[in-house]
Image 1 (tube, helix red, strand yellow):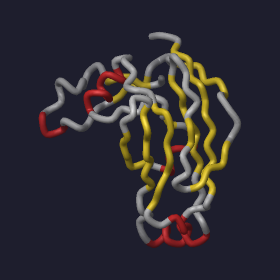
Image 2 (cartoon, rainbow, N blue to C red):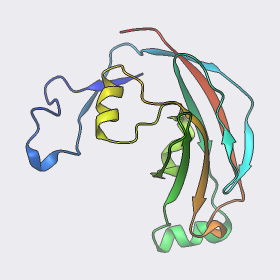
Image 3 (cartoon, helix red, strand yellow):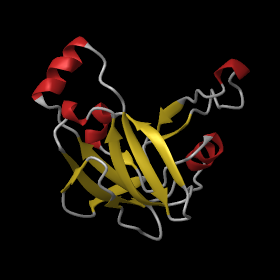
Length: 161
């Protein structure tokens, strides 16, 4: 909604050594208007969260993880193991991705999560990939985090651009 492919450094002009590196530029005007879609829900690790489905537009989800006291200590001394998001799509396919939990409190797009580079390129060109039905989170050591994860969905309506 707020970013588009960089018009100067499009992926078609980037050298082959950087094929998985895309530059984005901030749009002057946001392409979406956020509207609260539901209440904040607390889920636990490996608990499936059904994403509210819509016919159009994008659903952004605020996800808040909190570290346990042990996690706070470990984070200061070592690297925390990655959080994995397990995604189920409406078309029946599944995918797992690394989820950057420290950046998710402001909201991340989860309704149409691209599964590969081609879907990512199409997404930034305005074509939505298959819709996400549900998701869950897992981590190799859940003792480093609070047992509850706060999830708040927001409905973002495409305003066109």
